[in-house]
Length: 581
Image (tube, rainbow, N blue to C red; front, side, top):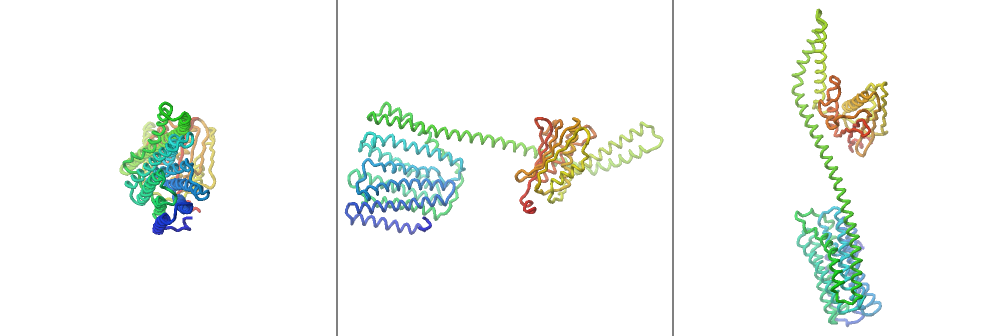
């Protein structure tokens, strides 16, 4: 409907001028009667129809808090439209005066509440969806409280025991308070907000001020018998509706306005939940006044106590729902905090490992050459000494032991040099399934001791970006460690699984051995539980470094039923997937 209208602010200002001038001319030239009432009522109804269309259009073209804001504005406009439609029904179609008391007054009173809810949302501020949910709950509680005030103060004199004078006085006071609060809220936002939303708030502030002033004037004139539909009193009323439409058109020409960040001092933002709490706590006080101090007739007092009790029950349900949501939110936050703490601990452990590896690499890179030369000399001379003729058997054994220890030291230095190599490795797309099969075929799997190896490799695994030789060595190190552990308990099972988990390829090695004595230290350099001479404690440290170099993660833990589990995760990048496709 808005697109078909194709309204602009300038065009609407011209329409507003025509409406104001035309309404004034009709009020001067036409006598009081059904014709003038029809012109005034139908014109106001048509203007409100445009306002509803503009607000609905704004709600449909926005999202998030802005959509909810304009949705509330549209709801308030629809209720206002319904009130005017009742006036058209009575004065134009039925050609009767509006009855007193009038049911449309309830609709007129309620229509301001969605406007207040829209202002309370403060869509110019960025806020998460969960905050919007809480804001909606607070709004519903305040909405119910305002309806309760109307039912408690105005409704008894309107329908329970009809008292027209008291009903009109109480209604006017409560309605003016409601409009005054809306004006204050809009004025505060117009003062504190800049940019596109600031301009919208200023337009709405003018609308609310003009409408409230017009409402007071019309109410005063009606009490003195001077008001009738289509009179000059309706001209500023029509102008206020036009200004509401102008605010919506201003928002349309502004486009989608991005919400700003939260202000540094936003203590006043907690006013909505505090008002909701005050509304809840005020009910017992109001019920006490109605029970012991209310001078009204018994029927009115009973009705007021009943409506207070009913409102307390409904508000109690809202409080329960809000607390239930907050409890779930606290549990979620605790879980997120726990996950964040675990992730922080994991990152800290990785950082410590990296520092250890980096320090060891720097040390080895500087000292390897100086250590290798003496080791080569020791190994050569020990071999020469062992091959000398005329030596006693004990002397030959001692020379051979020197050679064995020298070879062990040389192998250790070779491992350190391989571990500390800092040159970037050549990488390509690697099929981890093929790497695993190669490692299983290379390693001499024991056929004795009841050792069983089970593999479960998911078909169609995506390739990763890495170095196949380094990844092969990683798999080999883990498989050998698992087989050594199974050999200690004279058999068992080794399960190897390869699968995809989201954007990662996961390798899992699980054995039924005795487990790891200290899982948190298993990647430390030189940490080993193997007998002297069988392991250097650098295999898993080297594996850790390779996995980190491939932007992956490695983790180990003991199973509750026994045995160790090593989990390796490697990322699958979008570039690799597109290259494979």
